[in-house]
Image 1: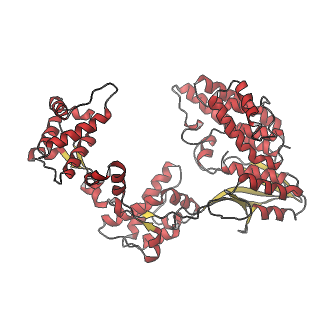
Image 2: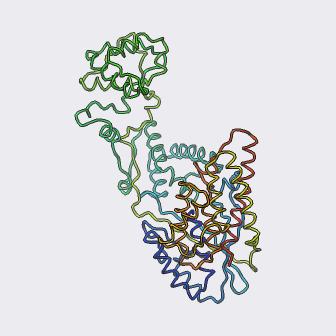
Image 3: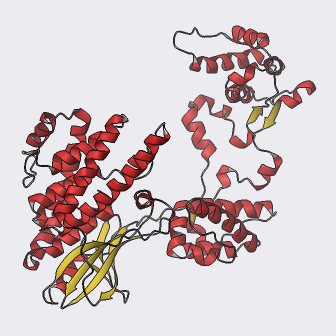
Length: 533
C-alpha cells in the first residue's frame, strides 16, 4: 500500500471509531508502526510524521489533533472521492501513478457543518542548500542572467515532457522556491548546479561560491574511484581519465588499427592486453585467441570489420599499455584520422572535469510529513459515493474481467487479480487474527486454492502488512476489502500494470478499457470500504 493510502486508512479508521478508545488505539498503533513513524511530533528526522494543517497555517501532530477533536462534540468521519484534480492530459489510472491527483478527501462533520481535509506530503529539503540559496548562488555569479536562461530551458524541457507549464527566465527564481519548483529541485538539483558551472565556464568566468554557502557543496574525484574499482593497486597508474580517452573513428579499418598498434615500441604488450580483453567476451565453446592470432584476424578482416567489435575496449587496452610504459601514444601521420577525443572542442569548452564538479551536500535531517490540509467548510456534508455492496460487486466484476484478459495475454498480473478475488470472496480464513502462528493456515489456504510459490509469497507479504490495521478494531469485511485493495493496486510506473504493451491494436484497446474500468472500480471500492461499518 502506498504511504499516502496508508495514512488515509489509519486516520479515517481512528476517527470513525469510539473517541473514548482513541488514546489506547493510538498507543497500539505507535507500537505497530515502530520508530519510523511519529504520531506525537512533526518534522522528526528519519521518520514519517502524521498530522493536520489548518487553513490558518497551524500544524498539529495526530495525537494533538485527536485530543482537540474530543472537545468539539459529536463527530462523524468519512472519505469522499472528488475524482482526479490533475491537470495532466493522461487517463486517470496513469495520472494517479505519477501525480498527486487529490481525489480522496477526508470529511469531518459536526453540528451540521463539514470540514474537508486533503492529504498532502511535505518533504524536508534533500540538500543542505535550500532552493532560495540556490537562487542566491546563481545571482552571485558574473553571468546570472545567462544562468537563469539556461535553467529556464532545462526546466521547461523537463516540464513539457511531463505535461507541465514551461518557465521563462524571469520566472525561474520564484518557480524554484515554489512547491512545484521544489519538486524539480528535489529531483534535478545536481543538474541545475552542473548547468550553472558549465554556463560560467563557457563564458570564460570562474564560479563564485559565497563563504556562507561553501559547506553546502563538496567535490570528489570519480576517476580515482573508478581506478580503485576497476584496477588492482599495482595497475592504478594505467587508468585513463574520461577526459583523456580516445576513440576509434567510424571510418577506421581493422588494418589501420593494427598498424596503429604496431607503431608502438611496446606493440607486443599492447597486443597481449587487447587479446586478453577480447577473450572476456568469448561465446560459449569458443577458444581463447592469442595476441598473434588476434593481429592476424584484424589484418584479414574486410574494411568494415571493426563495426562488429567493441572498439572502445580496443582503444582503452592500447591506451593503458601506453600508460604502463610511461609513453605517449605514437600516431603516424597517415593514421591521424583514425582516432579522436571522446569530447569535441565545443563540448570541452563547457565541460566540468569530474573532480571539479560541485556536488550538493545531502541534508542529514530528512523527513516526510503527511498532513491533512484543511480545505474549508461547507454548509452540509458532501454527497456520498456508491454503497459498499454496489462498489464491491462492480469491483469483483472488474477484477474478473482483468483476470481473464491478463490470463489470455500471458501477463503475470493475472495472479494479482486472482489473489484479490481470493481475499475478497471469502475463500481464505478470517483475518481477525494475524498472529505469526496463524500465518501458515492462510498460506495453506492460498496453496489449496491453486496458487503457486510466487503468488503465495506476494500474498504472505501483503497479508503481513495488514497487521498495521489490527489496533484499529476493523471489521472482517474491512480487513478483507483492504487486503483485496492491497493485492490489486497494480497501477504505478515502470514494471507496473501501466507498463504493459500488447502486440495487436485490438488487445491494446481492450487493455486500455479494462485498465480504466478497473481503476475506477478499485478507487470506488477503496472509498466505500473505508466508509463501511
